[in-house]
Image (cartoon, rainbow, N blue to C red):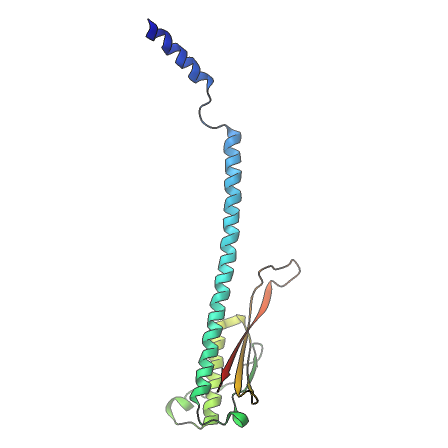
Amino acid sequence: MLIATLIPARAEQRSKQQNGFTMIEALIALVVFSIGLLGLAAMYSKSMMVTHSAYMRSLASIQAMDMAERIRANIFLDHSSDGYELLESGSQVPVQFQPTLCQTDACSPTVLRDWDVNMWLQDTRNLFGALFDSAVISFDSAEDEYEIVLQWRERAPEAGAGGSGQELVNFTYRVSL
């Protein structure tokens, strides 16, 4: 008889306790989860922008080192009078040059210089595409070194409401002879 009286008491206790979640608790959990997902989405967007910026800087570094090797390879060129010089803007029409001239025939140092600059500029334009802004190669005879500057456009990290959303990025590389 004692067992029969204990069973209804336990059933009565269970009915007084809550089972599961209420609708308000579920909605609060959903809001907290949504805020966390928005933070992750913002972080993902920022990481993609930083990754692209690092990629562009890597391209600029590779292109600058390529030109440095071209300059060093042209050993018979008199850099003080016939050095590598370039001032190229993305809005300018690229200079047309005969690319086969130095691929098959022996070239003079100045023809090789012109060929190097034009081939390098063509490669740089192809790599950067529409983001390319300008390239400058200048020689400092006092320091006996070249300065290679590449400029391109990137999406600005904090684009204002009135801004274009782009910023100009410079990459400078110095080459000692």
